[in-house]
Image 1 (cartoon, rainbow, N blue to C red):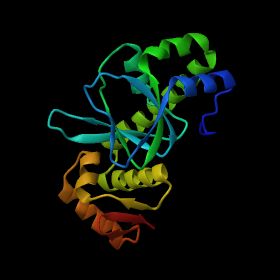
Image 2: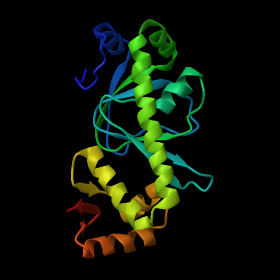
Image 3: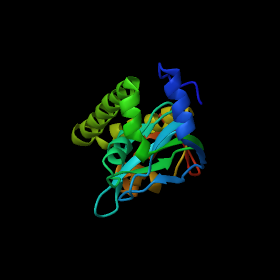
Image 4: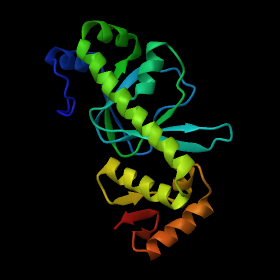
Length: 203
């Protein structure tokens, strides 16, 4: 298992490996759909997963990224209570994911106190990220949001080159393509980015 899964209990790491199934997801592949029953808890061991939510008009918004050594708190809570997913998870790049069956999560909670500590750390991080999303939508101008959004994507993949279309970018930010295109051109003129065919390079 990837050494970024820094659980203090070696037995728990061994147990997770035995209980789970490791799968490789290609970039853009859906790992979990909205309104689908949560069958497993994903723990990312390599790559990055973006978690999104859509409204009634099918407009999507990025909530947060799941990095190596992290899991999706929404999947944990939903799987624990046998609920349907309220979010969609998509591989931001080729990713390796350890999938823990939902029916075994209660067992992990009972057997390993460290597991609870790990879940609370993830919960705290996600809560702060969601507060940041609310703050940006409520108080920041669109150009500030866009630049911050691009920086988060760059951090998620570890590359200054972001392969994405203006349409995809607008969808993930919950705005119109024409707005994104105008702001990207403005940012290029200011020397903040360089635009290419279906890619953006942060300077």
